[in-house]
Each structure stands twice: as structure tokens, then as C-alpha cells.
Image (cartoon, rainbow, N blue to C red; front, side, top):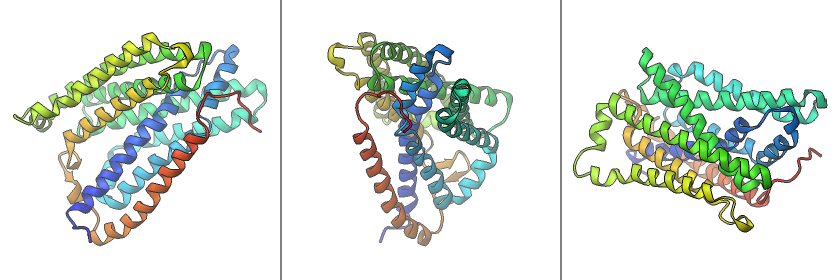
Length: 334
């Protein structure tokens, strides 16, 4: 039987896994939605971009549902307090997700003259969702303060997360597209990568500045000798990806997958840095994972279900990506 001390740690790990996978998978399809050109003459380009995410985008959102579900059942007191402060950005995010879902289906059914309007809606939904999630991240880092300087940081975080999603979305398009659209994706990735780098540096500096506990955790000797390898890895990945993108596309489309992998490494590095900054607090300054956890008996019961559901989600995600690998083809709805 698992010791009661480790149950909150296990659920925190499962929730972290869900959030990280969601950020990478739904992050790229949100990025593709934001990058869609909306000139009326570019409908074929938009169709290919939609086709590149069509088999995956709604399954990617499963990880968001899983993360919220784990938070609700494993850490109910944290769920109540977090969403008390995140109520408005959560509503905005849900509006964005609904708008995306409706637009994705209606663009296939609507009269041709209305198709562009639904593409506008898909882009707007993607943008709203990304901005809301970035704003929530900013609120978490700032300890849910609502003074003007905190709000300004939350807005900066919203833009940074949106740029990051566009970065990984462009990297996805480099894999899935060819010719002119692939060249455009390379240019988008270079630009978004540089904006994301600025955003990550800004968030790191502000996080250390406003949270003395986080600063002491990162710069305590001799731990500093090891933990600073993490930002060093992220910075190296940013510069390596920028160098690689300037060389793409290569003959026979070699290494078209590598920018996406490097961007995923950057996402993992940033997420690990954030987790290191706040663990074991699930509500910064107020609740640790042990204070917020459900009763051990409940966690043991829920863990059985989680250990069945998560491998199933991983399996069908792997299967879907295996079946629909390769370049995106012309969009057909029947």
C-alpha cells in the first residue's frame, strides 16, 4: 500500500504531466490557428493548415480536461481557491475553446461566402484561449495579486504564452507542409522564437524579483551549481533552434522534425523551472500539496482509475499520431 505522504506527490506529478503534454500538443494547434492568414485569397493555405491539425486538435484538449479533473478530485481546496481568482480568465478561455470548436465544424458546412467568417472565428478562438492561459500563468507567478503592476505582468505573460504557442505551431507546420507554406512556417518560427525568448527571460526576471523565496531557492549554494543548468539548457536550445531554422528547409526535407523537438525541449525546461520555483506549493504562499490533498483513502481509490485512464489516453494519442503521420493533404470533409 502506498504511504499517505507520497500520494499527493504522485498526483502532483500526474497533474504536471497532463499540463505539460497539453501545453505542447494543444499549444501547437492553438499556434496554427493564430498563424492562419485571413486574406480572402488564401483559402487553400488555410485549408492545409486546418488539415495539419484536423485529426489531433480535439484529442489534444483531453489533457486539459485530465489536468483540471485531477486538480478537482485530488486537491479540492486548491481547486476552489485557484478558480476563485481565475474565474474570469477561465470563462474567457472556455469562450475561446467553444468558438474554436464551432468554427472548425461550421467552416466545412457553411456556404462558401461565409467560410472566411468562420476562419476569423477560429483564429479569434485560438487567440482568446492562448491569451487567457498566459494570463492565468501570470496570475499564478504573481501570487494572485491584483495590483496594477501585477496586472501588467499578467498581460505580458499572456503575450509570451501566445508567442510560445505560435512558435511550436510554426514548428509543427514545418513538419506537415511543403513548398511556400513551409517557407512561411520557417519565417514564422524564427520570429516567434525570438519573441518567446524575450518573454521567457522577462517572466524569469520578474518571478525572481517579486518572490524572494523563489530567488533564495534558485541561488542557494551549492544547489545553484546544478539548477542553473536548466536555464542554460533552455538558452542553448533557443539559439540552436534559431541557427537551424535559418538553414531550413534542407534537401529531401531532412531534419524538418528537429525544430519541433527542440521547441518541446524548451517547453519542458521552462515547465521544470516553474515547478522547481514553487514545489511543493500548489497555491503560492498559502497551500502545499499535502495541505490541499484529499483524504488518503480517497486518493488511493482515485489512483486506481488514474492509472487505467492515463495509459489509455497515451495509447490512443500515440496511435492517432502514428496513423496520421506525414504531410498534410488537401482538406476533405467526406
